Every structure is written in C-alpha cells, then in structure tokens.
Image 1 (cartoon, rainbow, N blue to C red):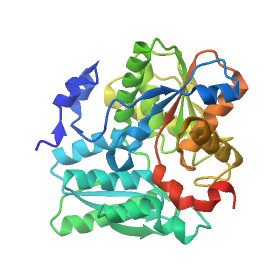
Image 2 (cartoon, rainbow, N blue to C red):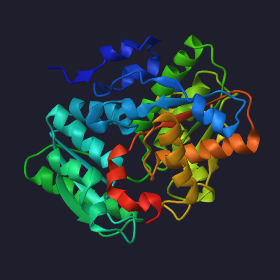
Image 3 (cartoon, rainbow, N blue to C red):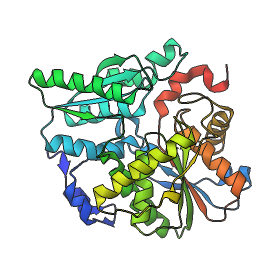
Image 4 (cartoon, rainbow, N blue to C red):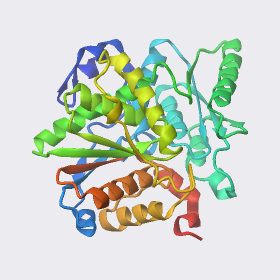
Length: 355
C-alpha cells in the first residue's frame, strides 16, 4: 500500500493543486472535506443578524478526529518519505495532538513514543487516566513523562534525547516538536483547509466575514490566515480564541508562524501585521482551565446544536465566536472551526459543571 500520496493533491475535494503542494508529500489520513453546517438555533439564541456556521473539523475521522489530523498528513508525509519507523511527539497530559499522532502512527505502521508534560495543575486521577491518555494506551504508544508544563525548549530537548536513544537502537525516528519550528508543516493542512472552506462557501452562496478558531501553538491559526490571504480573501477576519497564553504573547507568536508558512508556500508578505487578531478574554484561568465563558459555550453548543466541545480548545474558540457576535453584531457570515477534542471531556468529569 502506498501510504504517501502526491496524486491526492492533484484534486483536493474539487480544489485544483497549486504549485507549492508538489513540494510536500502528504499522508492519506483525514476524512475530507469536512461538513460546513448552519447553526440556526445558536444564531437565534444570540440574536445574531449574521448567518452562523460550524466547520466540522471534529469529523476528520482518525482516532476521534480533530484539527490535528490535517496537520499530521503533512508531517507524516515527510516522515514516511524519509523512511521513518517511529514517531515521537510531546504534549500536555490531555493533548489531542498526542492522541491523534498515536492514531496516525498505528494506522501507518509506525511505532510511537509520546511524552506527556505537566501543564495543568491541581488535577485528579480521572484527568491522568481517562480521555486521551486512555486512548494513547489503547493505540499502543510508549508513554514517557516530562515534569514541566511551560518549558517548550526543555520538552523538545527531552523528546530529542528519546529520539537519539531510538536511533542508537537502530530505529529511524521522526520528531514533531512542540516549540516554534522553522518548518511548521502542519500549518499546510490549514492552508488547504482555507481553500476547502471557501469552495464550500461559494457553493452555498455564502459571504464569509469572520472565521473563528482556537489559537494555541498557532499552527491552525496561521495556516488558515495564510491560506485565505494567498487565495485573495483579504476581507475575511480570522479571530483566534486564546487557549494557552495572553494576547500580548499569542499575537506575536501567530505572526512568527505566519511568516514561516508564507515561506513554505512561496507567498511571502500576503499577511499584514494588522491581520492577526486574538481574544484572550476567553482564556480564563489559563490552559486547560474552565472559565464561565467556557461553560456557556459548552452548554450552548451541546443543547442548541448537539455539538460536543472540549474545555481546552473548541469551547474557548466558540466562546470567542459568541463574544465577537455580541460585541460587533456582524452582518457577514461567521464560521466557527470545531477542532475536535471529544476525549478530553471525559477527563474533566464533574469540573465541567463547576463541582
């Protein structure tokens, strides 16, 4: 079986291939295109004049889906092209990325090493054993632990040491780093997603004014922003709901990743400094902490639209969309990107309802 696909890029769900895609092999992992659905009951509850839609990237399929599947297609494409036989990745205890990477490795026949960081304080046994951790064990990943939660450089150094040990044992490891990288290949998944979204919007005769998504590592945020601008959609605002750090730190990070993505696709300068928008009012107590706006988004999404949102990423992004609508009363369509994260719901248990 050919696990690396270049022919898949020739026609991506009806979207003609652009020249840059020929430079990057892509593993075939995601169910695409993901649905673009209206949210009429939430729109009515908010009294919004603008149409409100959800881009269902929780439906990408692999290992319960989520936005990381799109990103992993490009990382794993490179890994397989290099002949890798082990994937290594680092992330928080309930990292959706780590769980999805373990699923991708299993699907493609690679061994997988995951490194879990202590990023969220004051957690219980359920948090450490359920949700994504449970699935990583089921998927056969080798689990290691890193004692810090806010040391990206240290976490990457630790995972590189694990890769060195694998290399010494005769394996061919491929590492997905946590810190900002000069080659954020995962963002290419969201450059493609921008084209997919706009093709769907055109077919639905939809005038998109705002796209709202979670902004953490900045890979999804930067990819979507660069993709929209490279396609000439200069009037669409991309609003990032901060999930890990304050706006004064997140906005520069997004811009740095944007510049790297522009270079990857040969589109330097398509994004202006003023194009980066982040909202940290939804951050609450920090990464993985449930805030009043988080609970509101989770309950409104579930009870009005049947959407299950995780408290770490997708609920904070919907909270940012709700805040944008309430504060600005937009006229053009608002699209919320649902990035998945269902397994972590089970790790938070009663904390979701404030108990």
